[in-house]
Amino acid sequence: MATARAKAVAAAAVLATALPAAALGAGADVRVSPHGGGVHQAFVVGFTAPGASGAHGVFQRSYAVTASGPAKRHCRSNIARPAGASQSGERVHVRLRARPGERWCTGRFRGKVTETSGPHCEQGQRCPLFPTRLTTLGRFSFVVRP
Image (cartoon, rainbow, N blue to C red; front, side):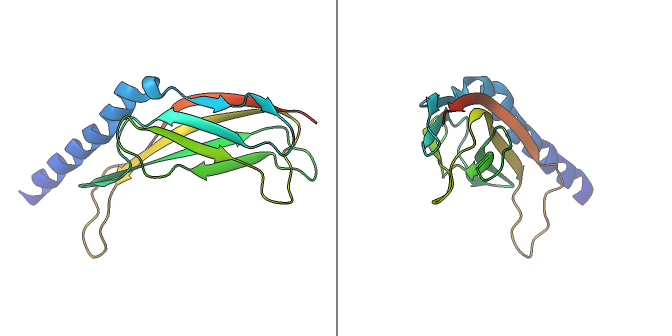
């Protein structure tokens, strides 16, 4: 009996995490601004969150922005930033900026916005048995000029 219940909870959790990403991922409307800039330029990536981030029952959801460009010496060629807390349908903005004292490498950077959905595990309790799902919501690019 306990095994059947655990399987039912796991199946419901998988559906709850898979459906929002599959149904709404195309509607994330990923954009970057500006499309080009200098080696010290900050770039802002915006997207519409398909679902609320954070823990929701037995699953949790988070968003991240990553970008990479030409690997050269003494400059920043990749970056990864988590997105802050968001509600379903909210426009989220993530600022990409080289660290103080660094500069971007010149060239075209390509990036993506990802949604991670997986089990939410409370300390001292059993963790739901379903896999974490990583979904690409959209892609973007920008150019860094000397």
